[in-house]
Amino acid sequence: MSGFRFLFGPVPSRRLGMSLGVDLVPHKVCSLNCVYCECGNTTKLTLERMEYVPYAKVTSELEEFFRANPDPDYITFSGAGEPTLNSRFGDVLRFIKALKPEVPVAVLTNGTLLRNPEVRNEMLEADLVLPSLDAATEDAFMKINKPSPHIDLKEYIRGLEDFRHEYKGQIWLEVFILPGYNDDRANLDALREAIIRISPDKIQLNTLDRPGAVENLRPANMAELKEIVRLWSLPGTEIIAPVPGRKKIASYRPDAENAILETISRRPCTLDDISKVVGLHINEVNKYLGVLEHEGKIKTSRQERGLFYSLSDK
Image (cartoon, rainbow, N blue to C red; front, side, top):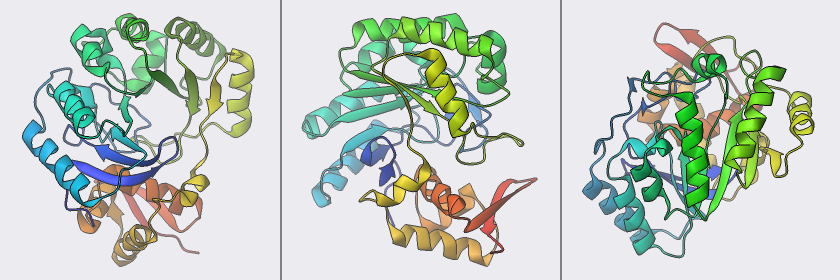
């Protein structure tokens, strides 16, 4: 599989086609500890910006990748943490734009650092920014996102508003709907008001399609998501395509799927175990696990060391 440490894919992305991932922080350095995160619990909950992954190593891998591979549909800052926590984020973005000006760059971010003018300025060179906002009431924010204690919800939302005023590119705001956490009328009304102020180009409703960091979460069903679209009645609102569409994307690799199945056929494995054995980034493994779960080929069980995957009994 891939010999890169800080690049992954190209992966079949529901929103971005064939996407080359750039991961600027170790697993799992983040400013939030969201209950639904497919990558598990945050291990370093922080707002401190540092050069977590060295600039020279990332840029070297990018040059090596493009010497031997065709251009992807997107180059995407993502991974198992918050990319803007890397203090060299802006430098890496500028390097990519100089190296591959014809390939659009997307940033997947939770948006919490956009209250920082320096971060907003660094992000201006991106072609597409996909921030998230799951709650606009304090109670829901604490329950669903479990933020760093230094994050103020009003400042978080204001940072998204300020970025909209400064940024000329596309903003696709992702809202993760989790029944029992943020889907009651008061929370939905508060979210709608915040979204109107942020004024994104698209509002993308998402929900659980893999087990999250805590037990007993359930995804919103299609009827519930459609009702939110109707209730909000905001232009540009869409429900993100479900998992089955991933297999139709050109970059979906049957060899990766087979390697994952072979690994867990020997013994149950965690996401981290699978990633190390098959040599794929955690985010890439997650894409394939989502399809395999949907097809009923694998099952999960939560144990002391985390969530384990094994072949289904079918």
